[in-house]
Image (cartoon, rainbow, N blue to C red; front, side, top):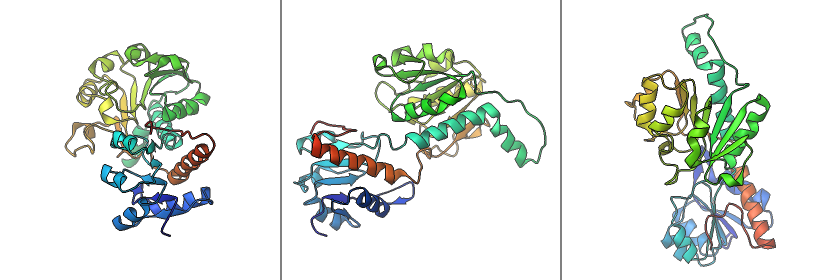
Length: 317
């Protein structure tokens, strides 16, 4: 194959090979020629004629060598690592993978919340000591869960919380858009949401507005029985303030799939807390990643043929 329509660049994610991604794209788009680039030389060759490329990134030099490229389908939900101006200058649209992580990260979040509600962390520790001893638990029903960020992940979390009989509050950049939660607040109103929260789920992207949004003042507002779950980005939470709050019993606990810094150094104090669950940015792991990503690419190519518009668009090419 020398002139493919779509080139899958060298990549692997969550232990999944790019070969599986290419095969999934072929199944979704049988009318298109899909090539898998296995070497830098093959990437250069395929980019020379391809209309669509999909992978982690493309440099300005690679864009110069891709005169026919119309769309770069980034396999990440975030595109802050890309030079979007360069793509715009070359007339190449950029889309992200927003929506791919909704079900899996929402399941992680629900699992973390239920673990704290039912005391599974205590159960694991006592099981390791072969200690048969009762412990107290709580109910999720009747709790108030605040979700910071109402994008695809935040909405998926709220959707899965609905059968549990909880009150929900959402915090988002544009509260006038509303949302699936019982109440919706702007980022500048976050303390109103935090004040009555039993659980706080951070599912927002990292921006100038959200960096250290959950700071010492936010922890001071949160009730001491509250639990923090961060599946967004580490720097949204002020790590020093979190450690200080935990040291003074100002928080029931935290589940952190992302940290600041990341990876979390072995000597970091967060490792020492029994009431802190830490996972290595693993909440997004799913065997269905490529299938969901291919769905987005397929829909975008269909939309491009019909309307010339894309979903998950990051720039104005």
